[in-house]
Length: 113
Length: 113
Image (cartoon, rainbow over all chains, first blue to last red; front, top):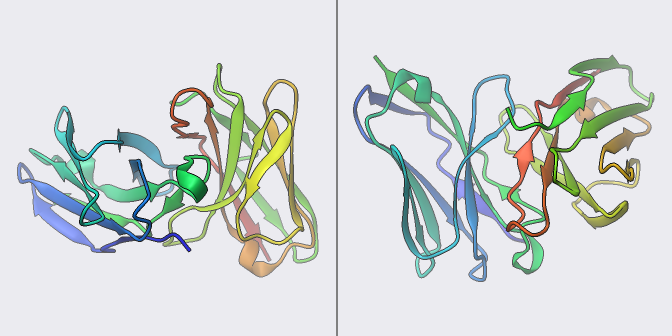
């Protein structure tokens, strides 16, 4: 069974610092990964997706995929209190298709002013 | 806002009852996936609908069923409700030709008493 695991945290960083969130996965054939942000009481919101080995940057967010080590990470630079949320890592389901996303349990991030 | 809508937002039912949840997909999306998110957990895939047919199912019993309509909207039906069915039910829409990135609606919070 394909699994995606995250450090449940919580992770606490001061405002302006870099927050580093990590995720490991079991299926070596997985091709793509997604990071969602979920505020308390709300639904997940897509932040980044990454298909290729290496880094992908979008504003203050950088996703990193290392297929050899089977991990995915999300870096948030210049963290803001508004970044405080649960971050969910998700990978594809059967056959590498994205139709069935397998989620980790999420990492709760708190950014302290 | 993703353009995915769900109704109702909240629902309270008693054990043994049946419930129907509704989802309208984002414009241009033809695929709808349903997820169940228990408190403190990541979303778990229930099933996906594409072209009005079930296109994959997670580890949920047959009392969880669904429909997709010609306008791509979808329903999730749960029969014989159990206390453990209390959760946030999320609908995600996607387009088959865009790497199937899934965008979530606001969710329906179901409480079974």
